[in-house]
Amino acid sequence: MVRLAAIVVLALAVALLACIRLAPSDPARWHRMPETITDRDLEGGAMRRVAGDLAALDAIARATPRTRVLAGSVGEGMITYVTRSRIMGFPDYTTVRQAGDMLEIFARLRFGRSDLGVNAARVDGWLARLAETR
Image (cartoon, rainbow, N blue to C red; front, side, top):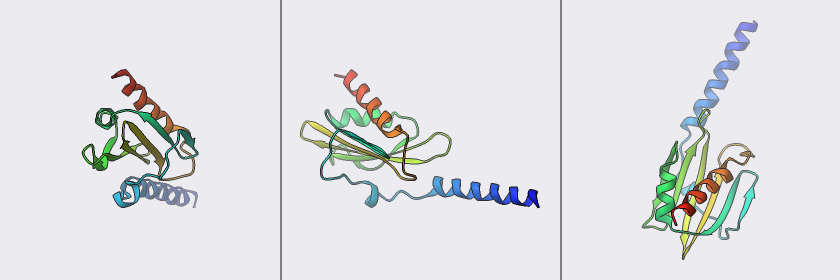
């Protein structure tokens, strides 16, 4: 009986991980920005507003491991990236918009309530690398 329970628990865990990894990312849902972006950390993400160039930040984001473009382009002035965690494959979404000479960045998790600061750390790392290019 214990063996059967262990097999059921393992099967449920594998099914949950498969759902997380295989869940589709709908650009209509994630390729969006709030009307107002302010510099602040959120429970499940971060917002930043800094001077910068979208093309330069795009190159940095694309070089980040496990990160791909979900929607948008430099030419459109807004890009949304999906970055997956190394082990579990949890997706985080980061949308970056060029607003004049400012970059507006909105990073957030998809699953759960808290990202333990992962999104803020990633965005701040991108911005540190961007500052080095000036």
